[in-house]
Image 1 (tube, one colour):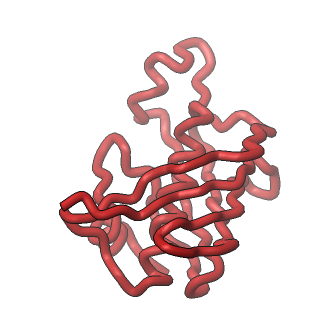
Image 2: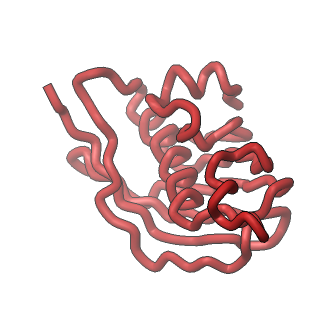
Length: 146
């Protein structure tokens, strides 16, 4: 388990872009399950959509990518630093199955499929309760920027 204080040490993201609130479980190098609490206070709800607030799909994918980054850093026994950055390299087969609204709790479920030479491939899905909200295969790359 990882609380918000440990997450803040592992991810460079900050408000309003930090989208992981808690890690429920992590199986080193294999799987992570994390939470994103979706509240009406999220800044994107002002414009998406004022009459019916819905979490943007790209932010659901970003939340999954942040959970995937936590899994990758844990698998490598490392932490990000000023000399490295973790990028999206691809999103395949993204399917949105259910709208995510204020009051929902997204369960971020990410499995590491493979990692080689700083390239990571994940099977990712987010659920609200037992309902699938989004699923995709994510490819991410860790690169030096120094």
